[in-house]
Each structure stands twice: as C-alpha cells, then as structure tokens.
Amino acid sequence: MSTDRAALRTLAHPLRSRLLAELRVHGGATGTELAAALGTNTGATSYHLRRLEEVGLVEDTGTGTGRRRVWRAAPAPETSVLGVGVGGEEGGSDEDDAQAANWLALDYLAHFGDRAQGWLRERGAWEASWQEACGLEDHTVQVSAEQLTAMRAELLEVLERYRRVGQGNPQARRVVVYTCALPLPSAGRR
Image (cartoon, rainbow, N blue to C red; front, side, top):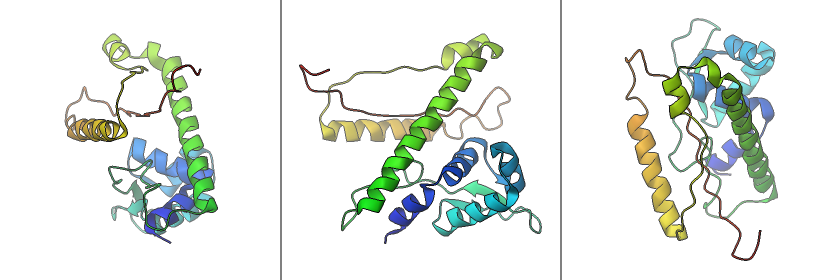
C-alpha cells in the first residue's frame, strides 16, 4: 500500500481528521492542549497523534520536554486534500480506499460548514475591515479539465505567496481559505 493510501485510511477517522485540522489551523500544540480543544481525553489524543505520525501527517517539533511533545501538521503536498493524495496512483484504489476518501471528503465539508457558520455568528465582533474582507463567494467559469487543473495550480501559487507574508505584522491574522471546484450539471439539467 502506498504512503498516500495508508495516510488516507488513517485519516478517515473523526478524531484524527479533527486533530490534523486543529494543527493546520492553529499551529503546534501538545496532546493535552489538543485534547482540551477537541473535548476528548489525552490518552486517545496521544494514540491518534502517533497514528498520524506513522503515516507522515503530523510530526513532533522537538520543542517539547519529556512527555509533553509539541506536534505540528506536516507540510502538505500541493495537490492534496487535507495533506492526503486521493487518486492517480498506480494500481488504482480498492473499495476501502474509496470509502475512506468519501468519508474524508464529507468530513471535510462538514468541517468547512462548521467554520463558515462560526464566522457568520461571530463576524459582528470583528472590525469592519475584516468583515468586508472575509466571506463566502462563488465564481462560475467555463473551462476544460486541463484549464481547471492550471487554474487550481495558479490559485495554490497565490496562496503559497501569502502563507507567511504577515509574520511579524501585529495586524495580520491567520485566515483559512477553502477551495472547491465542482462541475455544474449539463445544460438542460438542474
């Protein structure tokens, strides 16, 4: 089994997907801090962090002391969803891979929905400039599969340029940007 397939199967678990999301959004944390943030116990958190580490999705920063390891999300490949490639490998995937990928995609959408609803509830507490800059939008384009691939690569390049641009700026805030390219039904269909 390839590394991506092992990572996909490992990540297709509710606590593991939330642990990785928490580390990606908020940065490094100990198992105790993650357990508190996610409302679980430290034993389960530590176990699942080790499983994520085995497949290369999280890593120990080496900055903790003793049993207080500080974990961070491993750098994600640019063509992945949540750091896990889900297709295009030799030999194809089996039914377990397909189910894991489907579960992960649905969990990812639920996580996005939760985050978007949280912003809508809390946006009034943010400065007007942030309220104007953040939000939800969609854009319809007409492209071939090759053009869509190129467009997504360009968007990833832009996001990569901004990844660390605000470090050291007291006005900068961490922002999560979700992308989701979905085909529309053919003409005449709803």
